[in-house]
Image 1 (cartoon, helix red, strand yellow):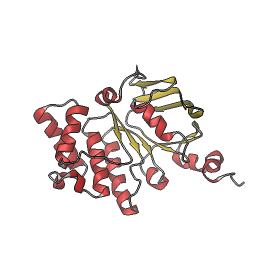
Image 2 (cartoon, helix red, strand yellow):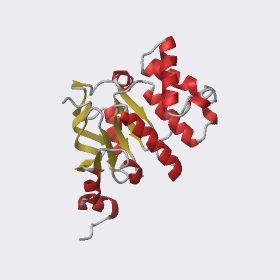
Image 3 (cartoon, rainbow, N blue to C red):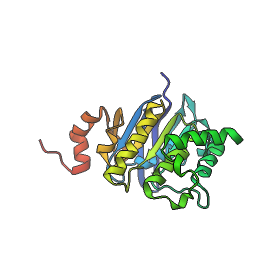
Length: 241
């Protein structure tokens, strides 16, 4: 089976700081992969490389078997690589619906009625249909997170990259967001999700990857990864026997 998105030998250095050091990563069609690790592990940098926001000094990124290492983020988006950010930044002065129509038009390459139809479907899917005509800047944090997801989904992605979208939410709000992400997965879209709220993450993902100091230190079944002594050491210091 061809992976939907993968990176091989990814290395990124900012000055003297080695942020990614020969990272290999892949996600299969329909698979949900969680990425965890301490601050500074290289998680968001890897997502930036996969999305095209950062070009690696070494290594290759492929989408459905095609080399996209030098492809811009907007081009990858129209191919099927969607992204939702930790801090939602909706277009101010526009309604919720208009925000999603823009995403469908420019990220999903849909025009006219097709863009509006896609936006309407996504708003319903993300639980935003009832507030479609509200100004985006008036939304609370949970609805802004939902709008961030909706804008991502409006591009009709084959893989969704999520960067700590649970940050700042209460436990009850995070549970609602889990339901939304689970629905995305059930629709067959692959997911790569960075999250510090691990108990939220493991409710959705099939596989867990742990990173530390720019390297992958564990990759596998979520329960097994969380019991791994190397992973415990990365988070808490030296693991006890």
